[in-house]
Image (cartoon, rainbow, N blue to C red; front, side, top):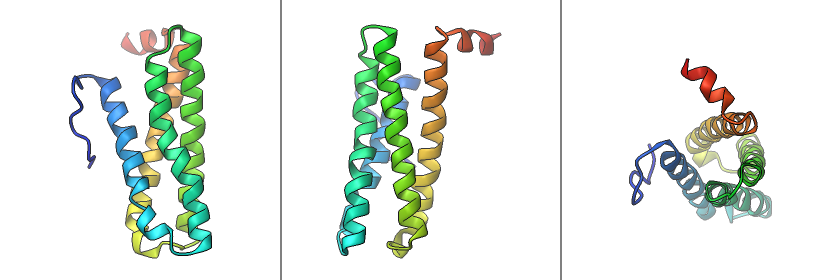
Length: 138
């Protein structure tokens, strides 16, 4: 379930992906209330917060890229930030510093895994000049 269900003009895959990235960031931000109680938790939050929020912002920049190389470069940053987010979410989960949020952490890890796969496929498609998409359409 995603918080953002409608963004003005949202009518395609790219807008839906932007909404998923926004919702992912919002859910990570909401961990702040619980993750600022100990030094270890504050440190983990200070790492996952910028990575999770940067992914959506860089995706928006990628969408505005003037040439394919701009798009690919920004999408690689999105991919990197999502992978870093996954690492920190896994660490928070495995270290049990937020036991009251295990269910939410599992959901976030599942979502970030899906986002990583989508972004990776988008990068491959863009690098191939759309040939990947053309093959799958046949």
